[in-house]
Image (cartoon, rainbow, N blue to C red; front, side, top):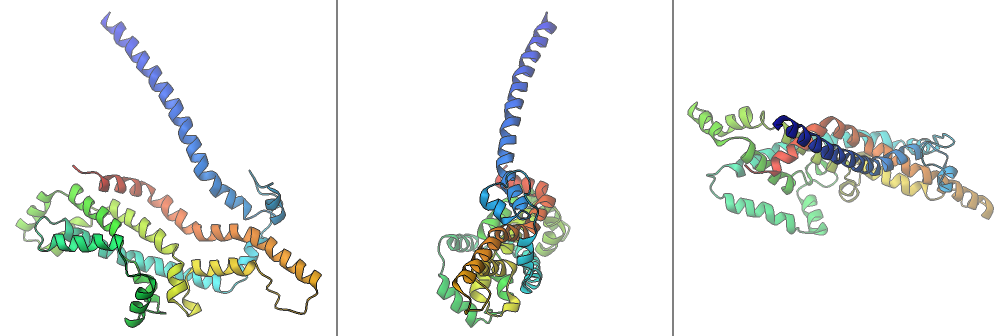
Amino acid sequence: MARQKEGKQKKKLSTSNRIFYIFNTIFWIVIMFMVLYPLYLVLIASVSDPDAIVRGEVIWHPVDFSLIGYQAVFQYGELLHSYGNSLLYTFSSVIISIGVTMAAAYSLSRPKFPGKGLINFVFVFTMFFGGGLIPTFLVMKDIGLYNTPAVMVLMGCVNVWNLMVARTYIQTSIPHELYEAAVLDGASHFQYFFRCVLPLSKTILAVLGVYYGVSKWNDYFTGLVYLKDRSLLPLQTVLREILATLQVDKSGDYMLSMSENAASMAEAMRTANVAKYCIIVIATGPVVILYAFLQKYFEKGVMIGSLKG
């Protein structure tokens, strides 16, 4: 009798669980579709005919396959050079940002650290108050960073929120007893940091890499304000200019008749309509690939760094 009751309970539980799993699966399929379909739509629109996009025919597959948008974008010689600039800026900035963030996070995670409260207050203060664009511009110019590659690498290289996440991760995931054991073996803070903390922080390092990498890769404003040499411009700034340029008449011939001028502007707008999708694909491609490789570390690192105990 007891076994029969247990069997009935298991059947009831399995039925309720099955219903829950069905609804949960349907719910997340809908959410996944809502997230992935816009990305898919941008991809297929970038290789479709501009007129088909205007008519709203591009829904599930490319219509009248065309590379006119990519041809219009890649005809600009600055594009590939700016792509290399962005890769260099992003890689250099991520390395420096992770190094500084982890070093500061380790220092703030120590229980006995003179001036810890004041330094922590200064970090948090910068999250809510800043000097503004003009004072910052004047400071960058006075210290010699204006119109140099260094301004793209060092500008905003430390994010306070990322610093707090890294500090919480070190405090909650790396036991203090490990530090005491290292000290007994004669290790200094530098030895403990490089030999123990960093090897045990792979997940949070991946998280910081994604955060800083995406932020720096998408940064167009710094190049727009602090760079005047076009050979130093990052990809995002150049893409912004390309999209703006494609929306106007680039013929340069001001003696055209009204009909020719109107036709030229119409063709420019037609090209710009599909080029904006091509620009999105070009700009977001590396970020999507980076996140795909670091997704498991990203999810685990954020959860560990946000929980206590």
